[in-house]
Length: 237
Image (cartoon, rainbow, N blue to C red; front, side):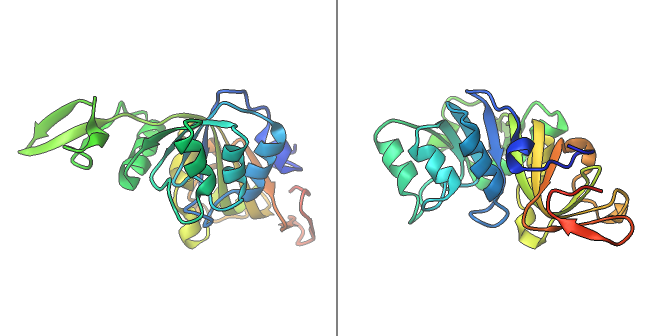
C-alpha cells in the first residue's frame, strides 16, 4: 500500500475480527461498497454487527453475509423489502437480531459518534415500541426520547474520487451515509472510481477529509498521475 491506496479490496478491508461492528454505506445499491462487501465475504469474519440503511437486496454481498450466518445483529432502517428474503428468513428463524432505527435517527446516531457526542434527544420514535427502555424527557413542551451514538470498528463506504492522502468526493446521492460513517469508525475504507495525485482535488470540494480514511481502493477505474499519464486500477500517485 502506498499512501492510503490499496492494491485490492481485500487489502483495503484488512483484518476484521469476529464480533466486529461494521458500517456499510449505501441507500440500497446507490453508494453501496459492493467490492468491499465481496472482500469481507472472502475475508471470513463472522458474528458481525452490521449498521446499514437496509438488510441486503436479492443476492448481493450483504444479503449473502446474512444467508451464510455471518451477521449476528443488524441495525438498520429498512430491513424488509421485496427482495430482502435472506434477512426475512433468518429473522423469522431467530438466526439474526434486529435493531430497527428510523432513518433520520440512524444518520444522527452515526453523526453523534463521529462528533464525540454522548447522544441526543429527539421526538422521533417517542411513544412507540422503538422508545422502549430508553430515557424520555419533555423539552420545551415536546416529549422526546434519548438516542445513543453508534460506533463501529470498520466503516466501508463508496466515493467517486480520492487522492493519495485519502480525501474523498462523492457522486450525487451516492454520498448518502458515507460522510458520517467515515467519522464514526476506528477504521474507514473506501472504494472509489478514480484516484488522482495528492493535491489534485480542490480542497473546497473535499467532503470527507483524508484524516478519517485509512485505505482507498480504486475499482474498475483509472488512476491519474502527476504527469498526466494514466494507469489501470491499483496504480498509485
